[in-house]
Image (cartoon, rainbow, N blue to C red; front, top):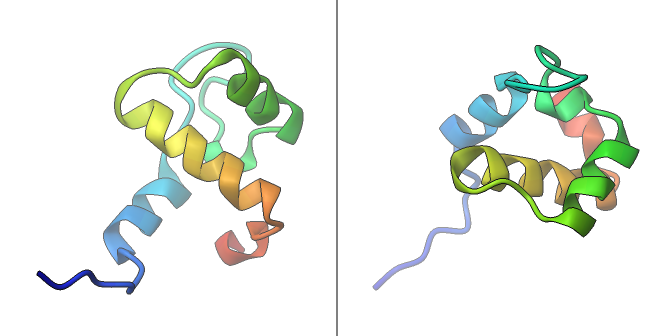
Length: 71
């Protein structure tokens, strides 16, 4: 079994374009959500499913100072 360490281009593009579907920041791209909001989710628990996975990825990106990847 071979594991690829190459980034998933489609997943990256989806993450860069996905928008928040609800709440105060509805319509804002996930990568543009305020850091304090993403940190709140990390403390309270990310939603289930694809949205939660994407928010968790955004959290890791912001935590590691990698936001420039989306510019």
